[in-house]
Image (cartoon, rainbow, N blue to C red; front, side):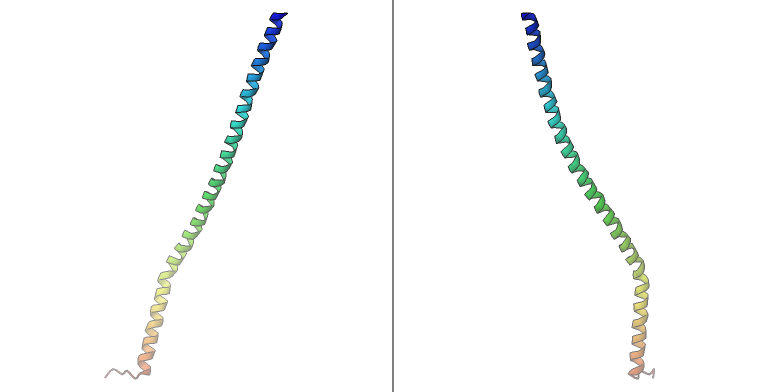
Length: 94
């Protein structure tokens, strides 16, 4: 009978040790899940930033493409204004 009781005690001790191990594993798993959630959020923010930067570069590209024709239009307007001013001032070529 003592042998059976001893085996039960050993089994209970083993079971308690297994339960403590599972508890530690559960805590570590929860900690890992929280860290993964934080990393997921940071990655989402980073991807959102890159998406915004991609849009900004598209806008800058379009502005760059518009700059040359706008410069030509401004130069034409300035030339016309200069010609008109010269004509009004009576700037003949004598």
